[in-house]
Image 1 (tube, rainbow, N blue to C red):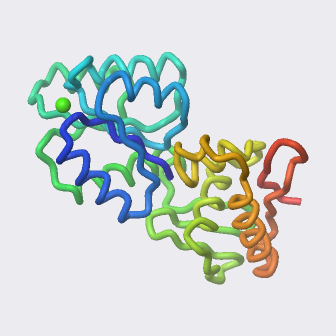
Image 2 (spheres, rainbow, N blue to C red):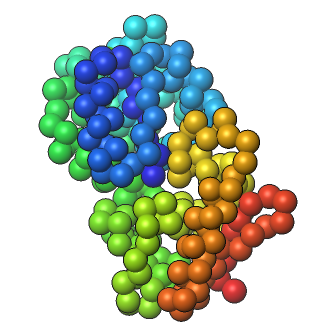
Length: 225
Ligand code: CA
């Protein structure tokens, strides 16, 4: 799952990045309004952590921009301003949650998990596709009730598809979602093919009744044949 941290204070941003990378999120960052706006126009995120007071603008305007574009990312406002007006405006603009600074990193993590659970799983603990069940909070996978061991990127790819059932996924979008925004600089996707091949083999060998099928010339799709 890919997060975007929009926060101008370097030390806070850095500790948030460290914490969330350790929790195995793909983490992107923006230090001001302009770079956040560029990133939001170019890339997709599962959840955005949004500071309000930015040196060159208000995070609330970024939130408006997101909602105007019908962006589906979860949004958690993080704000030092102990202002009820900001909180109300943020929530009315469609933020999912509001976390006042200073906050404990454990609480930030819990709020992110909660927003993702609501957004991607209608509040359920697990995601299901055929006889495959995946628990994002503990990064566990079972096939027909038996644990399936996956390496980190194999798991991330499976999770990406299970949150987008029946969508044909472009390989560049998959690579950005699983590896990070910088992937748009690479000129071939061999690393995606390698991980995909291993994941497909493991699903097949475990008796999964779903498969990730190649869509010629475009990408992949999770199907239940
Ligand atoms: Ca700030």
